[in-house]
Structures are given as C-alpha cells and as structure tokens.
Image (cartoon, rainbow, N blue to C red; front, top):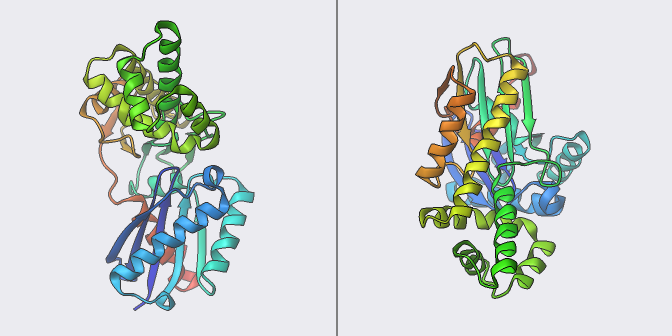
Length: 309
C-alpha cells in the first residue's frame, strides 16, 4: 500500500491528512502557521514537517511508504514562492513527488464540480470561484498591507486602534480595550504596540475572539467592527460574482476559515450580507476538507502518466 500527505496551510494553522491510495484517511494532524509570506520559509517548512510527523506517528506509517505530498499554502501564489517552497520540501522529503499550490486552489477543489464560490475568512480573506465553463478566478488574498479586509487580522487591528483611541480620549479602557489587554497578557498599550510591531500575526488575529465576546456584552464598537467585517467579506464575493458572470446563475456558495463557526451572531451577519449580494447562491458546505483535497491531488501522481489527465 502506498500513501500520500495533504496539507492545508495558512496564517494560523496547518492541517494535514494522511491518505492511502484507496482514498481512505488514516490520520489527521495540526500544527502552526505555514504561510511563508507571514512566518518565513523556514517557519512554513517547520510547520509542514511537524504536521507530517504527527500524522505518520499517529497511523504508525513509516515515512518511506509515503510516495507523494501536496501542500496547499497561503502565500504560495507567486511563482518564486512556489518554487522555493517546493525545493525546500523536496529536500526535506527526498525521493517523494512534491506538489505546491495555494490554499485557495484546495478549497475550490473541495466543492466538487460545477459553478461555485468559496469565501475564505481567517487570518487573511479571499474568495475563489469557478463558472460553469470551468474558468477559475480569485479575489483578495493580498496580505495585510494591501488587502485582507474583513479578516481576523484586519478586525483585530481595527479593534486595537479603536480601543487605543478610546483610551486616549477618556483616559480609561472601554470594555473592548480591557478584554484586548487581558487576551494579550498586557497591562499597557505600550506593550501592545511593541508586540504588534514584533509579531503582528500573533497579536491581531488573537483579538478577533475578544471582539466576539465584547459584542455579546453589547459593546457598540465591537458590534460595528463585526458589521463592517461582514460587509467587507460579502464585497469579495460580490466582486467575484461579477467577474465570473454568475449573477443570474445558480451556484454553490461555501465558507471556510478560522472565523467561520466561531459565533452564531457573526455567522448570521455574514450570511445576511452574502444573501444580499448573491441571491441566486445555494449555501452549502465543501464536500471534503481542503487538506483532503490536497491529499487527493497528491494521489494523482501515483497513477501512470496517462491517467493523470
């Protein structure tokens, strides 16, 4: 029996699936972030290797019996990044077939066939879609400096700014400000500024759950932030609908990412916005996880060349 590994990596976590050539999932594992644009190529490689090691140990499968792997990583959309990540993985997994793609490709693969759009709402934000003719397009996913509107990073950054400004104005922390400081184990905003400068990916996404709790307590600023995030995420989908000319067509609309399923209230906000911009969409879930999609893509490289089409 031959085995493959599939990875779905982003700015918060890396999920791994170990699969045999009959498409049976033998193990799942999780490790830290593996977006090379956020944690560096060394950090991304370490996360992928750690997830692989845990999955193989869990199923008691020796590494020698893995013949191929596919890593779908956020931040690997540029050709140079893809080539570098592929080279590093080939060095770490000598003799294996290595495929590197983006996490967006995996999410779309997980929807099956037919027109579909997947909204990714996590550390970053993006939407990827496919029309009835199979044309694929993506919107967003440009990172925190040029995009990622509505993402947990974006919401956390906006929340920290709002809470700091409120402290400057009133001289005391708001409910949201107190919760942010508590979550970050900080006593002053100067500490938060230092952390945000040194390790922004370890600061701003962690604030998102704080905003959910503050909103539950009726904090007006937190509620406004969540409403703005829902609108930003829906804007990504609206732009993709226009680009793929899906406005008058039925298509599957799915959501994935670390922000999904964290809060019934926020999920409702997002769904309301999505229904407004995509009235023809049929809300649904992906048939399999993105990590399973990666494993299935890797399986294609176990077949003879003529069967890989």
